[in-house]
Picture 1: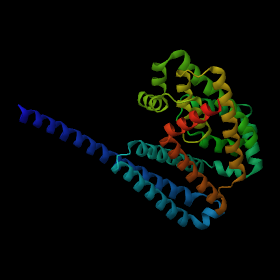
Picture 2: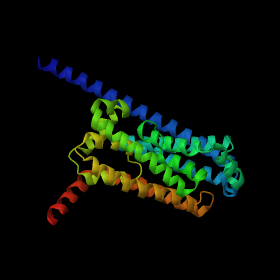
Picture 3: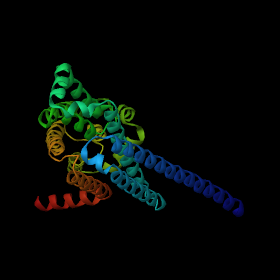
Length: 314
């Protein structure tokens, strides 16, 4: 009987190990595919962009992109080998974000969008021909970006600054994103867990509910301030939590104003077509990724430190 029980356990362990191995192989293949796709579209964008810096240094930028993406792929595989599944999934999100940005860039190049915005007269004519519909469409896009569309807000903000300038982009974005945030909160508050799971996916909802369980409102506020955290999901989860509606409105408004204004005016003042501008954007990107990983991994420690300090003051 003892040997039969041992054999059963051995079979179960072998089955689990095989399943884990297949999952790891699938992740590795996915990273290779995402890396190849990002390199391909990066090269296409660099060689087709008519900006002076890209015309002169397209090959250099392509080589740097290859090195960066291969390093990102290697880091992702290291996370898999060390069984850091959360970090590996975070790297997938980073890849998807990069690929989405490159696809948007490529589509805009192919449709001649940059030719329109390069000339002030053409851009003005383009916006005037659209009339009031262009701002309304943009506000709707920002609203849907929070509630249903998996579009990174940075991408839509870049397009908005090119069309409307930083001030009106910030104004339209704030209106659309605030309406979307309030809608997401009310869906969570009024319709409950099932509705939110249907909107954002059961796995995503459970993952972030587990991560935020027992956390203070301070942690949610911190997440809203920083990029890469899923603001749309956090709005839904805030509705499911005990957070008051008034606190949510004030917190989201202040965080959104700060984040949107910073993004809009940064895009306007830090150019993408100079070497120093690209260096600054690269440094900001690395800083944001680092901050995201550190905060995500240390949420419990941050919560404990904040609670301890608050108690001392009290």
